[in-house]
Image (cartoon, rainbow, N blue to C red; front, top):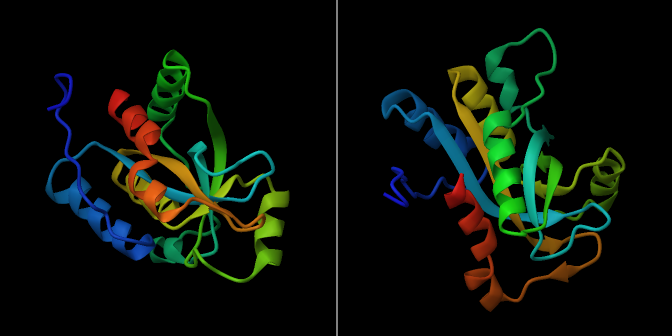
Length: 181
């Protein structure tokens, strides 16, 4: 427990297939109601820099993960509003600057297609990561709740990057925020 709340901390793998399996099993087989994913992301929006904390309100994707649902259109994966509001409120209470908005869940994190990232940036996407869309889709499909809180480790369009040592210890604000929800 943490401050009287039951909390489980575990790895969820890397990428949409992996987080898809983990979240499916947690929601279906273990009775989990809320999943808050914490992890790294690459900042692509102007004003988003390394060490910034981003909360993924919605998750665009270049993956075909949603094809499994055979929907007659395009599904827009979004975070649970209640968890999102709690995170934003908690950030305000502890004077932690966070940026809230859309992220891109991509099959590629370290890609070389800057033009594609610029197109996503023009659509207002804040950062690129690899899991939020699948997590949000699984939560929606199961009637459960999910949220992604991310720390910017790299900015692929500017070349800004955290040193390796800071990647080991520099994500504390994101972790503390997740534990406050």
